[in-house]
Length: 245
Image 1 (cartoon, one colour):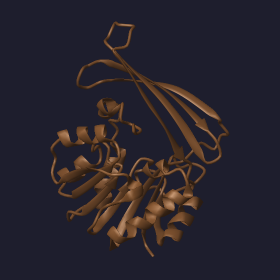
Image 2: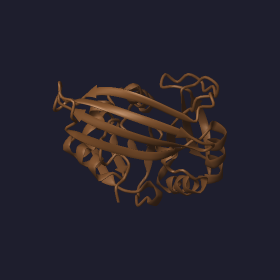
Image 3: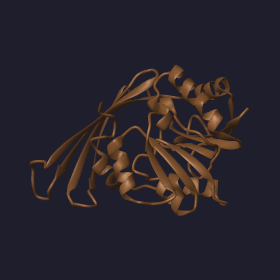
């Protein structure tokens, strides 16, 4: 069964070149080296620099094409594993469990999220932390949003044009993306890729309620990657640092 991001795995690292969140994790985790579980590691955008800084990172993702890109980087100690986060099959204790860049939102029901969060407690050290990074939806009542993005594929030098449509309802966003890859000067695309998925809209109150029900609590909450205190009306991100009750 095809998973989100399967088709666009060859394009992912060329599109997502920002690293503000990488610096946040590097600064927050600091030294000495930690044992880290990253949920939704993808191509290793975050896991690779963490491993290069001495941390041991176990990365799980459901997309095999994304994991193939990660494995090609051959950075140790980073160990990518194909696994559905709804059915964790891991043993051992982790100092940190990371859920970067909206990963928790792929579990679109409260029941799914609660089941998943409960599975984290047995593999988290008693003094360990869970870091959850979520988007904060616009306060404007927008039902549909469309936008276009262009970037250059770093390996082939081709131009990629990405068209996105986001459809909002009460508790989730449906995201439909079309990527067209062109040789410069050409009007017919070499390749067309599609990436469709839904994300749950999880506000701070919902997150706190679900964490408490799972046996976790929020120690800190930031509104961006420079650790500004969270403000639900103005913060662009919701970064929650959670621990076992």
